[in-house]
Amino acid sequence: MTVRITIIGAGPGGLLCARVLQRHDIEVTVYEADAAVDARDAGGSLDLHADTGQIALADAGLLDEFLALSRPESQAGSRLDHHGTVLKAFVPADDDLAAPEIDRGQLRALLASHVQPGTVHWGHKLVRAVPLGGGRHRLEFADGSATETDLVIGADGAWSRVRPLVTDATARYTGVSFLDVRFDDVDTRHPGVAALTGAGQMFANDGDGHGIILQRNNNGQIRGYLVVRGDRITVHDPEAVKRSLLDEFAHWADVFRPALTDWDAVVERPIHVLPAPLTWPHTAGVTLLGDAAHVMAPFGGFGANLALLDGAELAHAIAEEPTFDAAITHYEKGMLARAGELAVGANQALQEFVTSADPDDAPDHEAEHRKYEAAAAEYRRAR
Image 1: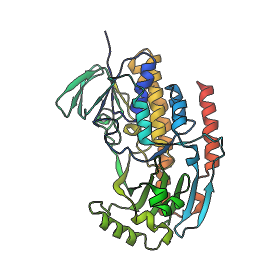
Image 2 (image 1 turned 60 degrees about the vertical axis):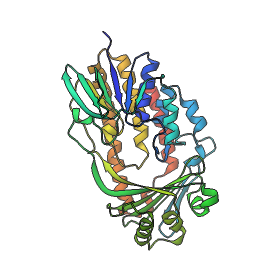
Image 3 (image 1 turned 180 degrees about the horizontal axis):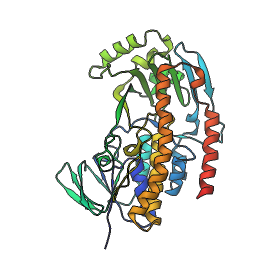
Image 4 (image 1 turned 45 degrees about the horizontal axis):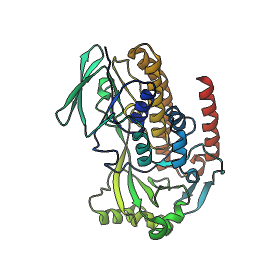
């Protein structure tokens, strides 16, 4: 009898899992709420670490294509105080590939182009997953369609509709919001923002609830994240947003003013996280990966990296273990322990960023990169 494997969500983790399953000649179907791979703005840049995201891409046979698209030079970074003083700076060596950057949209398109045609059913938003017994589930979609499956993999993000099958945990608001701002054609139209950002990224904070993060992206773009405590700034009126930001950041140096007022688009992103560390009892026929399993604060760049490695490890477990139950048990044991530790650290780093301006809190990128490389070598030895 043919068994059916269904992934909900065609983000990087879900697509990576599907790709590795297909490399094992295992059939899989992916359902995604978006109408197409490029139906929405996927967000800013990602640094894919040698010990997580890059291992997963190698398992998918896509590491070389990723490296060709990536921007190693954008690993550069600086940490400033709110007066504009540079506290720390990092410039990667020419051969440093520990954490090169790639735009989220580029990564998603790369993965989507390497699953078999027809794998992803776009425009299918899951509204309900109903247990049928024996590990089977009925999946019901917003367009009225439905399907039944022997294994459902929730790769559907922070607001997962699959997660309630295994836990009643929900993402909670951290009390911190990001205003995601975009600067187009930066080197011509926004030279001040370009100079402040440099080749990679810039972090600045004041220890009193305010921060600015700027990241180089592809195609002449820079994405910025204007960090405030609370959700008192809404984005319905762009000019009102700019006035509010000038008031919030009035004590910051003038060098930051273009980042607050000269952007071309803005999206509000309240930061939500799951309890960490999070575990749940084994549930037949269902598991989670990526943000559905462990959404955490975006400090350390772990979210997408863990989603990719989750996808690869789950696919390998399905291919190698005798039953779905055994595969889920094997996969979740490693995934939950790894994600729990990193989530605790990431969530703490977010709170430190908004409450402390101590330069010693800033990460040592050189040490981080050597850690990624050493951990990657150890991971491969342990296989």
